[in-house]
Length: 240
Image (cartoon, rainbow, N blue to C red; front, side, top):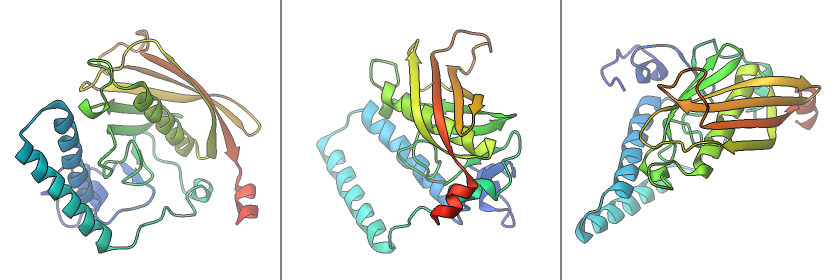
């Protein structure tokens, strides 16, 4: 994060190191600050799992966490998710090809302002999505491997962003995952997803996961397929 970015830049551009290639559907006026704080908390979570310390330090961490949580809880009312999240798929332009795509800065699993997320760089790639993901120690299951449930969660999130890049509103109806190899922790892996075919309101999708340094035709660690059911603009309008 570039804390020295010019004051005239948007929070999104400042966070992206001066680049304006971030497509953030719901702007966050504290994007950079919240992302930096969440990143520090993610580092703390991974360090807490990976390392051991004395009882006094553990007590200090617990006291600080409870005090800080209480300050946050008393500082404002809870912030609800916007009700027009799906409707905007049919009114907003699609993300530009190559742009980093975010719905909410604190989106589950992938939002940089969410301290429980993974480290994710999600981008539109043509008519598909490409995400570079690093799972930290907080998501380790078998030695050196990310928990399959965490991998599944990111898979669903990447496919959700595929819907954003396609410009459609859709719910996950079915998701099938073949775990062909272990997904490593502390090393970037690449999720790539695309639409396989469409039948009316049924959007069939496919996804693969490979190490970031693997060849494009290397055997994938993960293969997934899924079915998303499209909610049309007319249906959304009739429900409002």
